[in-house]
Length: 426
Ligand code: UD1
Ligand code: MG
Image (tube, rainbow, N blue to C red; front, side, top):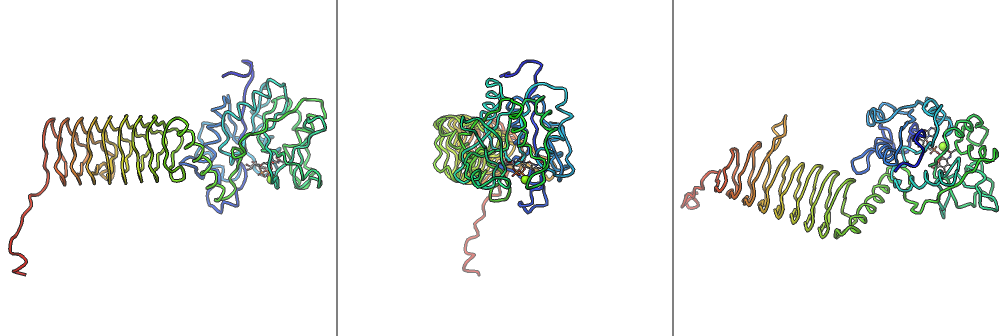
């Protein structure tokens, strides 16, 4: 969707220079992960999802770590001294100068905003011809946030920070999320007027609102419907909280799409997972990113489906099964206690309890291929690379080191010896 004219840009500025002291970490707060993905990577991906032409990340503290994660997927501005949110945006000026369009401001530590919400913010700024559009929220307990001061007509006058607010202003429940959409040219003009004459001695980006209003430029807001979207991460407890919020959001979406999730609290479905309808997910199941699961499958309990797996329809993955980069054909069952890595299994197979692919030789990973309608007995090891044909039966306890042709029974284990009378001799 193209909202702006062709010569107009959407440039997103991600504020990522903060210290994150409360994480008590040697790592930058922004490289901590939710569902395997760094906070700052989530925000950068979000920026591209909303159609940004350019993303500028303002880095300062532990910048190398953030740059290692984002690489050249974004541009960088450097803030050596943390002199406030307005000062942070000033560092991005070289990327904004001479351009027309919108600037979206995001925080590197506010990673779970829905792209639809930001698109709504940009759309409102365009359709209502606003020079600043704020993402605000109504909080029962607004402590710590900037408050949105409106006039009798409901128009936004200014944002006042808690530390600068009078007792009446402190009672205001509409808060500033810190996420905005600005007109590029008018933001650049307004930034020149920001002064650090406030309780914290900082350059407040929030001052831009009053500066624009005083100039007679229209400003407005989108009030976020789901307050959890604008939650930020300051400490490990909030990291867990956001993971939980994301978990419930993703699980609910799959349930709405026709997937049965028996226990949403213990089901961890990462981003970018597709699951067909009438599939049932049993408790304690983890499904990582980039996994596709068909219809009428049964997964878990206690299953670990790692990145890159594809399960066709009617597949069963049972208790204590881990699979990685593995494709499983329609109707195949892997009922319990199995590890399949770098594996391709055909249709209508049964993989017995305790089957293991020995896919790693200490240096490289190797593939195991199993054809259709094959029956793998319990406790079989496949020493990869190895190729098993169609209609194969592998005897329990076999260690398979060589390929098996179609229509074959393979037994690869020592014969049993019974020494009779042994007990009496002892
Ligand atoms: C800011 C807003 C406040 C809003 C709140 C929402 C201002 C003046 N206030 O408050 O109205 O309710 O966010 O969370 O903008 N950062 C930098 N460089 C700096 C300062 C901050 O990169 O010099 C980054 C931080 O790392 C953080 C974000 O900007 O990701 C916000 O900074 P923070 O200090 O948390 O903002 P607040 O003062 O809490
Ligand atoms: Mg601050």
